[in-house]
Image 1 (cartoon, rainbow, N blue to C red):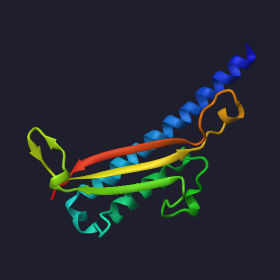
Image 2 (image 1 turned 135 degrees about the vertical axis):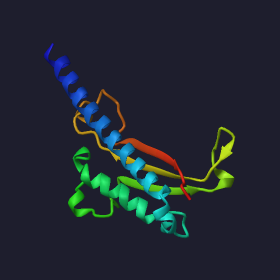
Image 3 (image 1 turned 90 degrees about the vertical axis):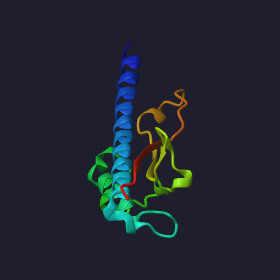
Image 4 (image 1 turned 180 degrees about the horizontal axis):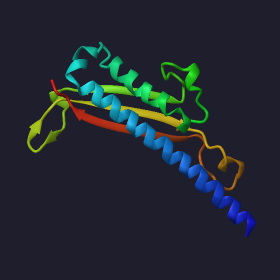
Length: 145
């Protein structure tokens, strides 16, 4: 019984950390999309269709909740440029905008990906999970401009 109990504790612990990291990614993506959709940040878009203000908002949220990412040293990575993170904030123009109730509106979409390194379960080779696991947080807000 003890090996089964230890495995269950490891799986629940790893699963809880995974869910926490995914929730933080979703919230950071929501914060970035909300910031990019605000009128105040209309001029924040550059030629590559990225919004630096929104990316910084996502990075600030990730840094404030850095405990969800055990392998990331947030104090040394002020721009969230760690190779495990990818932050993209794009603007969907009217031609590519989704149609909701017959109305097409431009919107801002934020996608944050993170490669979540498993800490406990890779010690058990028979589990067969890929390490790191890909996580993705996505949010999209209609633009207010």
